[in-house]
Length: 239
Image 1 (cartoon, rainbow, N blue to C red):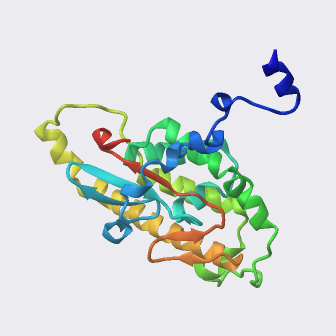
Image 2 (image 1 turned 45 degrees about the horizontal axis):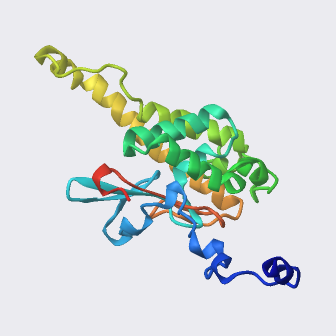
Image 3 (image 1 turned 180 degrees about the vertical axis):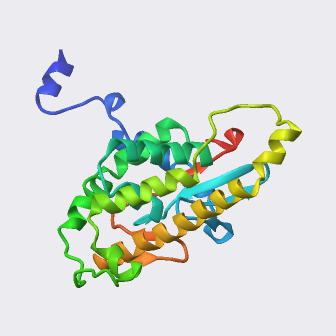
C-alpha cells in the first residue's frame, strides 16, 4: 500500500535502479571489419594497390587502406556502381587475403556513403586539361576519360592480371610444367603485369586531375570518412 503511494511521488526502490547507464553497462561491439585493428603493425607491412600486410607466426595481418585513405585499387573499382566491379573487388579480397563475406559486408556498409557514387561525384569535377590530340601522351589523355571509362580500363586490366584458375589439382605433370613456362605464356604474363602498372598510374593521374591526394608510395587515395578493414588470417587468433 505505502509502496504504491510513494511511487506516485516518484519514489523508486533502490533495487530496481541501474547504477550504470544501460549504454555503458553493455559496451558496443566493434563492427566486424574493425575487430582486428589492434593486431596490425603498419611499420612492418608491405603494400600493393589493394592492401597492406605483414606476417606474424603462421598467420598474416591485412589492412585494406587506412582510415580516411582508401587503397588505389578499391577506388578504381568504385568509380562505377557496376555490381560486377564490386564482385571483382570482393573476389580479389577473398582470394588474395581470405577475408570472409561477413567482414566484407560490414566494410561495404561502413563505407557506403564514401564509395557509392564516387565516380559520379568526380565526373562533376572538370579535369583542368586541354582537349587531347593525336600527339597527346598517355599522361595527357588519361585524366580526360570519364569515370566509368577509367573504371572499365582499370577493372578489365586488373582482372586479366589476377585471373584465377578454376582448375584444382594436387600436382602438375612434368609435361604441363614444361609448357607452363613456355616463352609465349611468360611474355603474356609480363605484358599483363606491365599493363596493370600503366593503368594504376593512369588512375592516379585521373584522381590527381580531380583534386584528390594520391600517395603513390603506399598506393592510397585520400577519401575522408573511409574506414579501413583489418583482418587476421589465423583463425586461432580471432577475438
